[in-house]
Length: 162
Figure 1 (cartoon, one colour):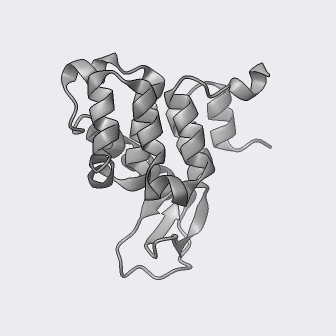
Figure 2: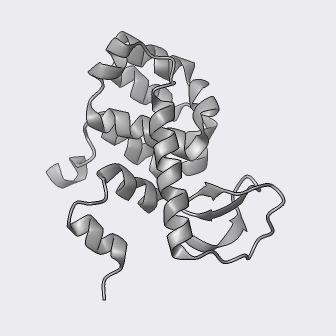
């Protein structure tokens, strides 16, 4: 029997953004310490620092955490230091990449990508994508960063074109 998310995805209820984030974040019902030592659960939901590892959460609670975290990342996208004009010129896939970066790292860390954001402001997508990869984040998440870079450049399906 298919899981609720698989059915919802087939029906187009879950957005491509949510699907991508869930794929990249992975899922754990029990709290654990992430690669930076932060208590985490579900699809990358940060818990309070005093939460012990190994606490199991109901899946409905984890879905709600996820929805709240996605909503917060979308809202934070509007807080990036970009002009309204630059933000509107971004393709939906490029917006999704930035939102996923915010979901993964948080707005304060994405704001540190000054050269990437400057390139976006100038409309220089190629430089923005290159700058995305010149970071500790790209080293930490590896394939996820490369996938998001390709998506930002509109080349996410290049492997199928060979």
